[in-house]
Length: 477
Ligand code: NAD
Image (cartoon, rainbow, N blue to C red):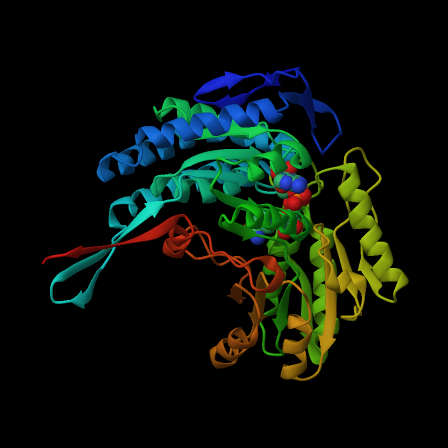
């Protein structure tokens, strides 16, 4: 069995404890590799490496065009390993091979995108008084610790690391214990790109051990967390104790409103990717559809036909639409949610149970006649379970969509763009998709309202979270 290590100060480091974390393939439960488990000692080493690199000012003082060139080199090297890394990601996460390779290419795109912004981080001059020259400069925080989840292991690394690097911070990434292997392939790209030592460190250990120790470490002065609301709150507490900033990107319970004039084929395509790709384990999954009474039966029939047509199988098989969920625990949780929906009065128009085969496969599930009071409509399921709710008037549709503690994504399907923009203005969510789920890319700001978090990643807005403003006033006498 292949054994992977932590990447600290550009070296491959084994845990002093000799403990490892075993990783399985969710399509059959077989162990595919193990990684040396980072503990306090390895967190200390990673933070020390980041601190030394930051104090050396190797990135901070690097001419900005050179920083941009280095970022483009990272992008190039990441693309070169996208097939190797994508395969490992496909095996450890279970997702479709094309999506897994795309994650590596997305990381490369993010590095290319922010490379172009490194030399455009401009301050301003402020007219304080006749004899004062006052200006601002944007500076990095220093040592930035990023804790990432397992559903998009590489994209989430790329999203925060590209910003952190572009702005001159030194970074430590703590990968998720369920999917730590593919990040080691990315670490090879970092090495191949010639990134100076200590600027990027990638370690894996358990969340409640290495993760919590890392975010509380006295030398860490900036934290980025992507994951569940429960963990996010713990991390916010840890950051509050040290009065350091935290970027938090949390869970969701996104709803799409379907107006009577919607193109139902667009709704179907959106459901296919929005709730069934990556087995619904997407923070902005289209987990609820709020459908006008007049078209609900027709849409549910179409959703059932589409669900039946999905190609189910291991992500490594070409063109699979529905792949396994990440673990047996997750499968039990998702199946439990579907069962609770049925017990509370919803109808399983399709699916509702695990599939009788090896691996952690859940049937594509469409629950009809869901009421917003039901658990399935309120809690994040993180599996291929779509809840269909009915409404009669527009205001009611908005109320249902907003009736959640989350506020990550939302959608609207209509041919009437005036109605679409009215709806978008009423929806309490960080991103609103009109007529197609997931319209954004690396250039569009992404983040939550309400308990889904308050930070913004991606796009030009994303950079703000990684920089602090310094004001300098010079008396000219
Ligand atoms: P999680 O919160 O269980 O774990 C996320 C990471 O936090 C893992 O690396 C884990 O090891 C670490 N962790 C756990 N406890 C910790 C602690 N006490 N201190 C420090 N680190 C700790 O989440 P998950 O199950 O890996 O991911 C799924 C969740 O992530 C879902 O809620 C999903 O919606 C959310 N998510 C959000 C976004 C977004 O951009 N908003 C993107 C992807 C996933």
